[in-house]
Image (cartoon, rainbow, N blue to C red; front, side, top):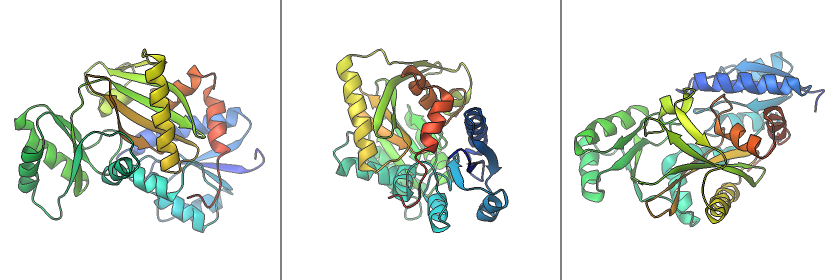
Amino acid sequence: MKDRKIIVLMGGPSKEAEVSRRTGAAIAEALESKGYNAQTLELNPRTVLRDIESLGGEIVFNAIHGRYGEDGALQGLLEMAEIPYTGSGIMAHAVGMNKKVSKDVFKGANIPTATSESFNGNLESAEAIIGHIRKQFTIPVVVKSATQGSSIGVTIVRDEAQLEAAVTEALKYDPILVVEQFLDGREFTVSVLDGKALSVIEIRPHSGEYDYTSKYTVGATEYLVPAPISEEMTAEMQRIGELVYREVQGSGVIRVDIMTDHADNMYVLEYNTVPGMTATSLVPKAAKEMGIDFPTLCEKILLTASIGKF
């Protein structure tokens, strides 16, 4: 594969484009250090196939966060063009990108997840949705846009007065929003590479909330690797992570986010099909704990590149 041209696709029109560019640059540098012929390419949805061809690209390493890269659109385009690409296929991306659909999948597969309900802003007014939330949930709750990543469009509503603003914010990004009952425990993440769970990480944001700033500001969050939990809890989280990977027919690497409640019961929040690969990213931290350095991690993901995934 080292004699083939690797295109690391990054950027694009999503709200996560800048993070994607950082991910893509780090991946390209890592692959070059391993002897691969890798080059970054900014995603232009209208010309992407022509752009890949003009650079002599033979394999695409997907570093696109959010729209197109994580919703199945890019994967479908590359499959039609018969260009191998890294990561999961169309279905895993489409399900993972939509928090409503992924919640439905978790429930159907008996994967533990927080009590939730989805609402459609195309069918009901914001006022009606707020009324439903008040009837069905007790504060605190988490209000999320269905199709955004990096905590964009997510609000933890700790006071009744915040509810209207939270719903309005979520509907700015997507007509579908998901409301979850707030979990008052600890936050963890499990990265799964080629079906095998890596070290569990506990996430402790200094602000108390793992939002966009906490995720992408160096020093804003403490990451405990491995997580300071019992062997039994570790094994169960890894089992859940691997179960999610199997059920959504993942490929390459995915990251499964898990919250606990006050009694240490575990609940899957969501899974990420194109995890970040920046200085503060979680997959590289988990891999490093298991003796896999960053260039080797990128190489392992690259070697999953293929056409015609599920």
